[in-house]
Every structure is written in C-alpha cells, then in structure tokens.
Length: 221
Image 1: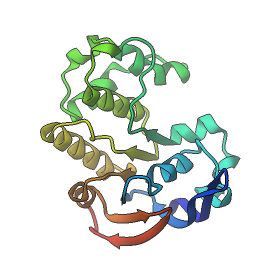
Image 2: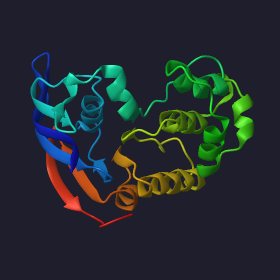
Image 3: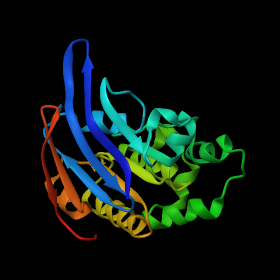
Image 4: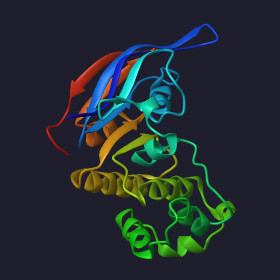
C-alpha cells in the first residue's frame, strides 16, 4: 500500500524550476534512499514530503489524501523529518528530549529515551550536557532520537550521518535498520553510494530536478 505518493510534482521559485515531474511512491514499511549531485533537488523533495514547503504543480498524498488536508502538527508527527543541519531546542539535551512529550501534554518516558540511547549506542551521560557542549555528530544523533521518541509512520532523513565517524555511522545505520524491521518507513537522502545500497530497498537518483533512475536493490534489509 502506498503510504506517501508524489504525482507529477514540480516546484518553481522566482521563475526558476527547482523540480519537475517528480513521481514516485513510498510503500508502508519500505526503505528508500535518494542520491544525486549537490543541488539536484534531493533535500527539496524531503521538505515537500514533510509539508514544510508546497509544490507549485502536482500532488503529494499520504494514505491517499492530499497532505494539505491534514492538520500540519498532526501530519509532522506522523511524517517526521531530520534535517541535515541539526536544530536543537532550549539549552540542554534533556530539554530537547522533553520537548516531544511536552507538546503532547504527557510526562517524559525515561524508559523510551534509554531504549533509543541503547539502540544507537549513546552513553546516557550525554543527557547531562548543554547544547553548546555537543559535537556535530552528537547533535545529529540527539535530533534523530528526538524524532523517534513517538514513533512516526515515516521518517525522512537528510544526511543524518554526515558528521559521524565510521563507527557511529555503523551504529546509526544498524539502529535504523532495526526500527525499519519493526515497521518504520524510511526515505533517506545520502551522498554515500555504499550507504544508499546498505540502507535502501530501492534507490532513487535525482539529477537537475528530475528523477533520472529508480532501481530495486534488496527485497528486505
């Protein structure tokens, strides 16, 4: 069943064509990677999928309904987006991880936080740090965990391992694959061809604002 679908989507900004005739679907429980040169439109596709921006042509649907028919806050809880440049709230790691609970009016689930820290092999002592003490890689992983505290239906990932070393990249990939096996749907942008093969059941190649190729890689991860 198609969970997320792009149909002939285009985007024009100030007379400049950013995307044209983008059509693809993401099935429930699928993991798709997107590759392509810098500036080809990959991140823009994720912003459209997350309803942060709107297309100038075509339709994007979620569960068969146009995404603009959903309340934005509800939609973004179901389709979560991890930016390439991590954005932290408040002053501390704890405040960042408390935020998803606060906006839902519920108490912090310490067990869920520990589960995700364990999954991605992060020391719980990181909870005591302020945002300014974090490395770029730590910031990326905290933003990833923040997006997963309330499991979304679809997770959109934009180069979320770009600031990580090889060991931590491997831990993040393994954690995401485990969540995928438990039912999480993934749509991931990466510049790394090998990572795209490891993480994707299908791989979409974007060039100059259009889909140049779509290939099947694995039946399952």
